[in-house]
Image 1 (cartoon, rainbow, N blue to C red):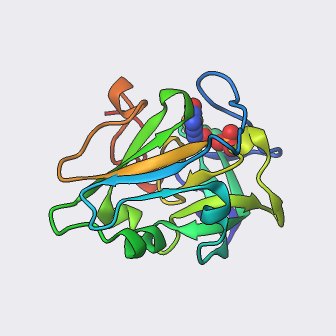
Image 2: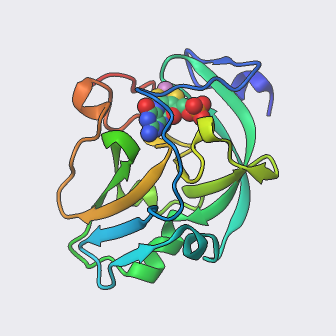
Image 3: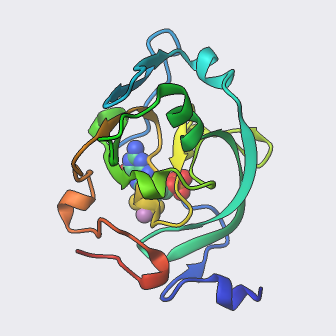
Length: 187
Ligand SMILES: Nc1nc2c(c(=O)[nH]1)N[C@H]1C(S)=C(S)[C@@H](COP(=O)(O)O)O[C@H]1N2
Ligand SMILES: [Mo]
């Protein structure tokens, strides 16, 4: 595919990989770090970082689109698929949405129809190396088919929900569906 047709409407390719977040970059304290999966699941889970790293993982290469207009091609993430987490915790039939919780109160939300896609990954590696702090170490979500505010950095857990619950940017006027190909930037 030519580069042009890989770029969603209104996007430009960034040369570097910009670092963008609301607020500061949190410290990682492995002793206190827990990833908690709660809500409408048969088997709620609290994982230490070591336990998270020991889950079945994979690498995948995907594109990344920030709502402010920059995109990156071919980021090679390593991590655990969202659907692997779901297979382990077994969301109930009622569960249709997930709220993803990150450090410092940042949240985002996804319908399970999107989150269970084969390219939605909780990543701990990027480009063959551990994730860097500024890009979300020790763990971030990556949702390639949505604007990157859905790709929460420094995630600490997720809750399976019956009804949708808007995240940090989704409550502040950014699109909840956030499809870059339809240019769904604002709500
Ligand atoms: N915790 C947290 N995650 C976040 C954000 C944030 O403010 N806080 N910003 C999002 C936005 S808008 C973008 S574009 C990407 C940027 O990821 P990067 O800094 O790795 O390029 O992180 C997303 N994840
Ligand atoms: Mo963004």
